[in-house]
Image 1: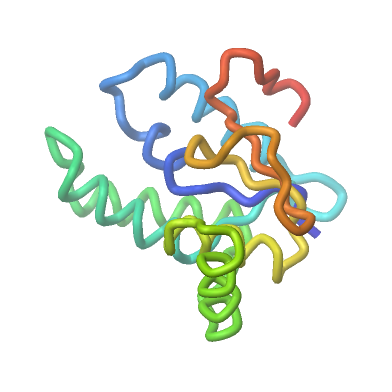
Image 2: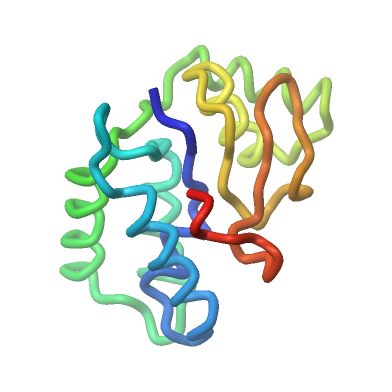
Length: 151
């Protein structure tokens, strides 16, 4: 079972050179959680993160990342990390997360993917770092106080 679920921002910062500090941190996180352990890598990716990564890198980053490079990068992520599918159960749980915890919908979907797949920690800058909701803890890997050697 994976210990961490990676949110889109970790993937995007790994390819976005506009903020070298965040890029270095993202690459460090990806390398640490992507290392094969006794049961495989310690992180998983929600399919949502791969879709958002595609959209952000090809259409929102300036300059945009060429589709061939995005294609290659997604293939690398898919080969490195198990991918959690987007299922009707994840969508239903996300809607409950919006209702019960006032998450924005796509953040709720990240939380739901972690919760339903028993992944205890989400690595993301989009949640209150250190908070726990129904057994899922959010950690901001870009917080200067976060020690990546703990991954």
